[in-house]
Length: 459
Ligand code: ARG
Image: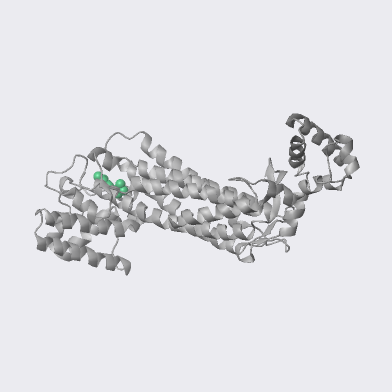
């Protein structure tokens, strides 16, 4: 047998540069658990349908199991001359168990093999990511519960808008993550389809049992078209797209944490363990972790674009371009894992400056809308009420005071309908309490949402 498993047709050796250029084993070696898993299922299936004898099947399975140990113990002789993880493992199997090892690749191609490996890998990683998202959500829900009544300014245009509870703000993040979670759950269904049996592109002439292979590998179904199964990577693109959205959310959270931890806002303090200092300015404590999460988001968007571009001009069926699908996937998985783990930990040690949040909510006439709503309850049409309150706010700005610092008599100059009860209406507590419906900021609503989300996470 020539050195390359495909060497029979060739009269000269591969150019060294080409070997370096075409190899993928330096990155796809990490698919080895899935490659071995897929090969074991394939061998068992071949033995079941009689293409291999039972004994041959067992020898191959035992050989592959031994290789797994060899790899885990760092004893495996990876070779770039053998291109990729698939040929490295197959060649080593033949080296170890002899002639019978040469029968493993019967009725199979690296094209359906690699498609299977990536699907198994992604399925595993999606499950892991779902656990990490759940952990992060659990942490956020704990924090939201602690701050169900903590008042802060809500913003639009980064200008103080209306008082909200900090718990409610955190629950907005939770809702985004819950959607990210369900997107990944849906993506998993499309990932969990077995392409094995598609062989190179057309299927195989052996009497294979595709359902049996799929069942052994825990796939929920088998692919319907061999050309499609070996070539499309839409499931991977979908995963990257879901990942890009998740990173976009983490990046938005990062932006807020960075702003909030600045001395100008001073809403929160990140624990020292999550910050770094400056080599010149002794006073600095910088929020590098959220900054890096925000920064790494760009990589993930890039990976999505890179896979979309990889696929856009490929004729059916498999093309070697597809080998380039792996590094974007691996880097995305690694980045998401780290970001989610670090954020879960970081939020667990977050210090919230409750008095500062409260004082910030008191600035900027954040209860002006409540005053307008009060006038509406006194039968003044909303547009007129808006106009009246606008004038009151201007008066306060000119006299450098807050709404609650006005005397009742001063209020009455703008509208005789205003009574003593206006001061409760204008309080921050009164404002958040008034927003008592599904999805709003009142503490009771926040607590109910927390319960709902906790139940969802258990499902
Ligand atoms: N290393 C290849 C990949 O990742 C495996 C499939 C190669 N198939 C082939 N016919 N050259 O896509």
